[in-house]
Image (tube, rainbow, N blue to C red; front, side, top):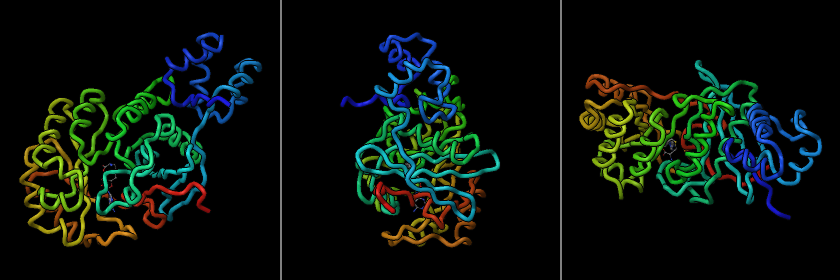
Length: 344
Ligand code: SAH
């Protein structure tokens, strides 16, 4: 049997070509597109399509390529989902409720090859890149399940977005499409461990979309202990790329900094960080480390985090301490992992 075309993978233009190749009129594509982004699960939900065309579509096309296998709900309302994807793998996705609206944290790869020492996502390496359709579909499934309009999307799940640039950028365009999901660029943030070429492309391609950079250290020495990527990109290069980003886009950049007990959480680390970020259009998001069973690192204590934040503030660097959501269901930052689709 021939492989079915995943319609969620298609832009409106591509869907139009596909519909035409089936001998149908252009406006049918817009109808399908609208229904798909309104959450239709089957072609039979698309009553405006002629019955014969619906039957043809069932043969040739698929509406969804991810399947919800499991859902856990945290005591704080955060939801973690396990989605099976083609090939027997599964990825995790998180839904969070913020005062500004429902937010989805999507995965863009099954596993990750960045190998950060404190993160669960890279423990088994990279299995494969997700397609744009698989990325977008996580959001549509979550929106339906949570029963709430998703107003923000963060690319902070499993995977490194700039290691899968093509599919991630296609997913961004699909999410922005006014005739589809219609999410404003400013409602989306992409997080990178610091692939500078990707950052440069991103600044050109998506100047309105938010960028976060996982910094996690005040010096190359500490960063190299924690993040293999720091062996090929120095902090100087990374901060220069970040500065160029803010200059081209006029947008503030976010630096994520996981506070790890005894490793990067001392006052002298805060001083060093502040002096490196001085004068930059940036914001530091401190994340008390979330525990990952296989890793030996521990979180900084609350007082330590507050002292760290105070030093940055005193030096004029904007800072917040991120609230941990969903730690009881392993849904917090760095706790998402490549999972087995057949997990009970
Ligand atoms: N690969 C991208 C996207 C992942 S975003 C990136 O590195 O930015 C997930 C964020 O959580 C990153 O900042 C990551 O470094 C951070 N993180 C990873 N493990 C963590 C942990 N155990 N506790 C807190 N934050 C963690």
